[in-house]
Length: 362
Image (cartoon, rainbow, N blue to C red):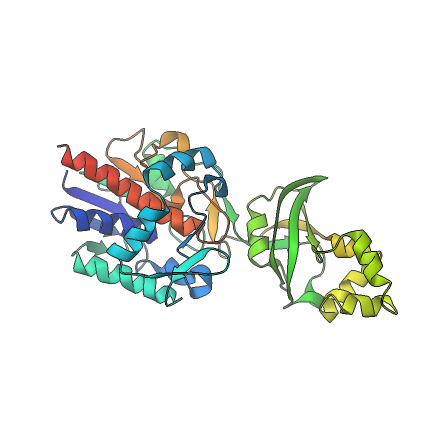
């Protein structure tokens, strides 16, 4: 049982490899990666700063399957993550004003370099450009990631082993809308954003929206995308600090509508609000019709994955012995802010703990 094959050398796969090898150097561990280099998605995260975790990571309600995550977080929590990041990788963390945790350098390259150095130091074997079948001798770990920003995934490995994969969709991605966004291109503005179906609010949060020529972007919009259903609309409250009555009182202090709107909004956004008619209503409900989600190439994560009913809280398969499944290939997703990478690390540590217990009991 010394042999451990890990398929996928992203952050979850490298985490479990390093966690295991550091604690038991006798283990024969090989990482298999479909791309020609390991850990490349790390460089794309957190706008190149790599948002590794969040101070609210232990709150299971941040995830799409909170009951499952509540049990996982009893085994491995944010303290374990911080210890691994500092003690195993040698990365010091820095917290921003929103509780997001980054490497102190605020450079994703620092994170990838730390992982690569540790793989080399621990003499963990790495095979890149791998396209072969699973080697099921010993313990097998599937950590192949998702469709998001990737040409290669391991969903077929799971289904070939008898596992079920739930419906898959892009998530944390931009929203395509019916309305013409070209006049607003390049504008960034803080709003309260809501995604609605009919009169029902599916999700609401505050943050910055970014208007692109072809889509709505910005962190708050990406978070809305996790709740998208066909027939949804998105509404931006452009002045969440003011009620409609307060806006009417404020408007009376200005000579005309243009002065009033320009006191609150960038010029082009003010013009678009004015086009909508009732400016007070439009300020509080600047609405767009969602046509759909943008592609996996733009998505940060994938919604859906391995059915969690088929996996234990230690990420061991309930269907195939000596099989573990970790990271984004699972049906676990969360909002922006370090929760998804945080989960990838936690799943790797948790599987590592389970494998060490199993190995030590032999």
